[in-house]
Every structure is written in structure tokens, then in C-alpha cells.
Length: 412
RNA sequence: GUGGGCGUAGCUCAGCUGGUAGAGCUCCGGGUUGUGGUCCCGGCGGUCGGGGGUUCGAGUCCCCUCGCUCACCCCA
Image 1 (cartoon, rainbow, N blue to C red):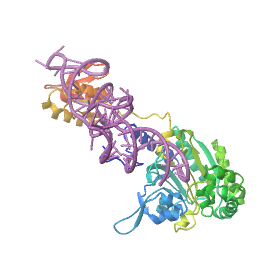
Image 2 (image 1 turned 45 degrees about the vertical axis):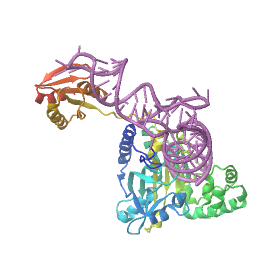
Image 3 (image 1 turned 60 degrees about the vertical axis):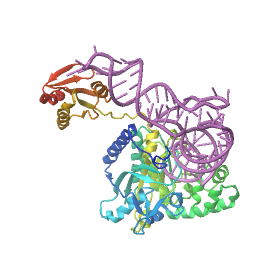
Image 4 (image 1 turned 30 degrees about the vertical axis):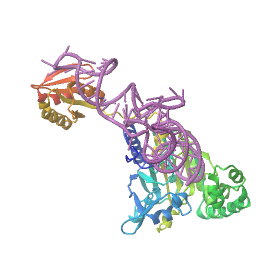
């Protein structure tokens, strides 16, 4: 048993009901995002390692210890994408999308990879549905991306709480960081080891800690929301006003910190209590410095990403489409197989969902199988003619082989 | 990387204080030489995660190891 090869840790086969649920998720994401004018984009599963090192941030856990990085035969350092925003921004630059009407609105449903221990709702290969609007710093962009994610979650039966914050511009944040760092240094002894080591590299992460001592220190720390520049305050107020108008409730959370370095101004996260330890279903924010960090002209951007597995875990009461089998074609004698096979092909060409006996089953076995898969009609090819049977009622008629498809269509 | 729980047929599991493998479900066949959903019978299917040790004998005890899972860290 142990010699049998299994899917790698943290990965999974998607089949059966799970596959149907995912197809439904993609279907609804399409509907919601197409309606707002977002265009689908697919980027490569791997990118130059440099893209994530520069885009996501050297001090982040994602870059420091969670990347699947390898060298290809040409000696290039490549990395399986751990997130979607940096690749989309790379594509924006590479294809000169600055020349298109701004903002450029893109969405994706793709798999991502992070090397970490799997647990409920967290995997090494996971799927995210995400959207990015690049090229405008208008607060309407922030509000729209938040509302689109809210609508998508609603569509998929996820009840989630929205937390909202603002990190300010890079300048304001940098000034605040120094004040926060000195506060943390002053109480270093009470902090957890991880937070203490990162006081200078990324002090804001202290707000994310569950460590009791750390929480006590951060509770007394200066708040970033109180340190924003007037422009940022105004921007944040405009975003909130649009959300208020739309009737979307939220909690302003001064300590909301996201794990990636590129965020500026608006940040948000949707949490679901149905998820267990990993309560975040999705989130996002504004990243006005990212395009520039990747070598482009200063260009604002804003987007969200939500975990597909977490949505499916937290979602409820979403009706899933059931597969229908209009007709099952069997036969009473193996020498009728060719006729049965041709009949099934003809039925499909006529637009019916048709299946044909593929396993050489006994007659009883075929009836049983047709019943199990939920076939509405059974065509039984006999020596001289074909019997067409309504599975539910048992009603049966005998027809010439070439009349079966027409009769099946009539009864659909 | 750290800690807890768990690893017996494809799936869900039973196997008491060690005696040398079972059930249900699924799948296939049969039950008046050609008609399903219930029922009955039968069949396919297991190196008891792997290795080592103790023992006359281990799925049951000990050690190591691998895997799954939940949680920490962190994140979607």
C-alpha cells in the first residue's frame, strides 16, 4: 500500500461532486465578473523567481519559506506562482496595457503553489479566483472590487464578515513603521520570538499575532489609521461612502494587516466562521507601488483574491446541476453491439445525452446500470427491432432501428 | 519547522486481556434459456502503511520510519 504512489502532500484530486461544485464556482465567477467588464486572463504556472522576490516582498513568509523554486535546464531560477497579482502586473507591463483605456480590468481562476503544512482549507496547490483593476487610483475601483467579491461570495452561499482598513501611501506607512518599531523595541521582552525578530523588517505583522504578550503590546501601540495623510483619509472615506451606498456592511479594523508587502491604502478581508482555523475566504486591496517596483511607470492598482477551496468549504445551499442521461442504449445479444453503438452516436448527433453499453453486461446488468445512472429512456436493440422503454413508468414500445432517435426526441 | 489524533479490502469500519483476517456499501454474476430500482445467493477484492524487535506465535506489545489529518507559524 505504501508503495503505491499517492498525490503529493497538500494536493488533491478533484472529482465527482467536488468537480461539479468547482464548475459551478467558475460559472458564477464568469457571470459576476463578465457583467462588470473584467476580462479573463491566464498567466504561466511558473515565473522568474525575481518577479515574486521583488513583487511580493523579501520579508514575507511567502518569499522566505513557501516558494517552490527550481532551476530549469538552462540555469534559470523559476518559481511556481504563489499568488496572482504580481504575474498579472507583469503581463500588464509586458503587453503594454498602459496604452489601453484605464483601468485595465482582468480576472483569473488559477492554481497557486505554496510550500507549507496542509490543514483544513490550506493546501500546497490551491485555486484562487481573483480580479485586478490596474491604472486608476479612484476610490470607486476599491469599492467595486470589494463589492464584486462580496457578490461572488453571496452567489456561492458564503456568509462572511468584511473587515476593512487602510495602510496609507508608502510614505505615510514608512513614517508610521518607524514609530511602531520603536514602540515594539521598547516592549521587546513581551513579544513572541517571531515578531521580535521582525521588528525592523516588518513591524506591522505584530498586529497579526495570536501571541498573548504581543497582543498586549500592540493594543497600546499607535494605530496606522490615526497616522494617515489627509489624502489617504479622504480616499478611505470615499471608499467607505460607496460601500455604505451599496448597503454592504463592514467593520473598520485598524489592525488589519495583509501578508504581502505590496499593499497600500485600502486593504480588506472576508472572514467566515465556518472555516475553522483558516478563517479568511478572500481579501485584497490596493497596490499602488507594485507596477513601479516591477520596472514600470508609477501605476496604481487594486484587486482581490479568494480561495476556491475555502469558498467551497464555507458555501452552503448552492444548488448543483445534475447530469442527465436522456437515453441508454443496450442490446440483447452481442451481435447487436454495432447497431447499438451506431444508435448512440446518432442520438448524440441529434442533441441527446446518450450512453451506450460499454462493459458487455448481462441484460439484467444493463437494466440495472441504466437505472443507476438515471437514464430516462432505455433503447434495447433486439434482433429485428429496438425496444424503447420509459424507465420510470416501465412503458415500452417496439420500433424500427431508424425510428428510435426521433421517438426519443419526441419524448424528451 | 513544531505538537496532537489516526493509519485493517475501492469506501465506512469491527477485530476483547497476542493464536495466525471479518462486516456493510460499491462492482460483476445468478435466483422460470430475454427486462431495472426491494430481497436472497455467490464472486472479485487485503504484503492488516513500511522496516526491525520481543514471543512457540503479533493486526494486536516495543522501537524506528513513511503517510494522512487537525492545530501552531502564516496565509487564500
